[in-house]
Amino acid sequence: MKIRLFNTMSRKLEDFVPLTPGQVGFYSCGPTVYHHAHIGNFRTFVLTDLLKRMFIENGYNVRNVMNITDVGHLTNDEDDSGEDKMEKGAARDNKSVWDIAKFYTDEFLRDSDDMNLLPPTERPRATDYIDEQIALVQKLVDLGYTYEIPGDGIYYDTSKFAAYGALTGGGLSGNRAGARVEFNEQKRNPTDFALWKFSPTDKKRQMEWDSPWGIGFPGWHIECSAMSMALLGAHFDIHTGGIDLSRVHHANEIAQSEPITGAPWVKYWVHSEFLMDKSGGKMSKSDGEFLSLSVLKDHGFDPMAYRYMLSLGHYQSQLTFSWEALESAANGYKNIVRRVAELLDDKNPGTVDDAAYSAWHDRILGLVSDNLKTAEALVAIHELNKDTSVNVATKIALFEFIDRLLGLQFINRANDLRRLETTDVPADVMALLDARIAAKAAKDWARADEIRGQIDAMGWNVVDTKDGAKLVKKS
Ligand code: AMP
Ligand code: ZN
Image 1 (cartoon, rainbow, N blue to C red):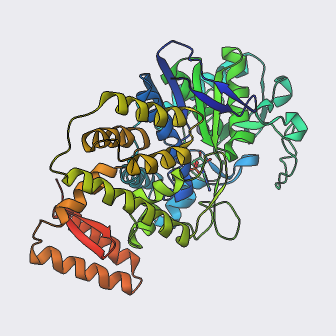
Image 2 (image 1 turned 180 degrees about the vertical axis):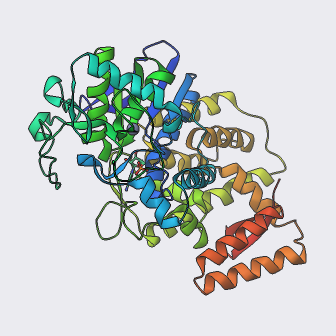
């Protein structure tokens, strides 16, 4: 099937042509593990997952990498200054940086499972690739792209890279238009960025390494160049991330990589637009109030309802989160689940009609392969549900395909719903459910979350239904 993607680099919809026929390699910037990932981050991670699923359904051999950023990411990314986010998170939680990296990585993996994200082929941690990062900086030093600011670090001289900022059409000065930060006066150009930062002489950092230039830690951008090239080769097909990364982080990744690999380093750049909060701002981790997936679950929402809400929009358009919008998406999602449960209950499903299967399969896959038109695919799914000329067996086979493609777990949730009507719940588990309902009524989300963990450990899932929370035995 023909695949088209919007390439941020060319600002055009382009036909996808892989570097190697039948194969696709892509890299996605992963979470910085100093705090919970918020549901905005998951918008971008769902885009990555959808791309992977779309390529798999098109018969591609997919190799994708999503890193874990567990080092060297300063609160002021634009100017390589401010506090280290990991050290700040560690102080907040009263733990070591290594402990918070592990804690928030585990939380992220749990949330990723809840969002039904397929594991990437590789999930490297930046701290496991320090040697590769140092080697890359050394190459840039040898090629004459760097300079040292004494007592501060090794910097990349962006004036040496003619194509700097091409991704956003910014160039050397334009790329900084509107930036709010004061620039480090010792930098040669405002766009220059740190490749290696020196540890302060007056205090010991928890994460630091030896290097040819002195003890310190890598700048944020170099990790993605190093890990992507180590795991995908010098050139690969696609690089993804949130749109905020295109102007600085990805511009810098390109500047670091192309002097070594030749241009173009990456063929297609795919960026997800923001999830906005109600006040019209971008949902962001540095805000005290942000929504994690646990908060959504504690309000009784199935993570799949959130994924369905994301699928109702297009990844290139901003989406504003509100509880009302989520509620309405949850209702739409449950309607489809109920419909699928009816299909599964049917005693005379017939046999799969190959012609009807192919027609609907190709229509839905065609929409998603055309720059990920998920909203249109959902419209097609509603039509399929209403089409009385398609028999039950064919519809069930199509929902199996739809679940693989969109990751919305319709069949799984429909089976939960069916089991619900037939299972007896033990009294101790039922008592926990009541305690959780009470905790939620008291808005004690932490307690509600804790009780859900206990229910989970006893082998039961809490399922949201139109009549309130119910329990389903895990299969
Ligand atoms: P971080 O953990 O902050 O490094 O972000 C992880 C990913 O989430 C990056 O690709 C960001 O661009 C993306 N991201 C951050 N905030 C949002 C948002 N509000 N909506 C969509 N994506 C976001
Ligand atoms: Zn990155």
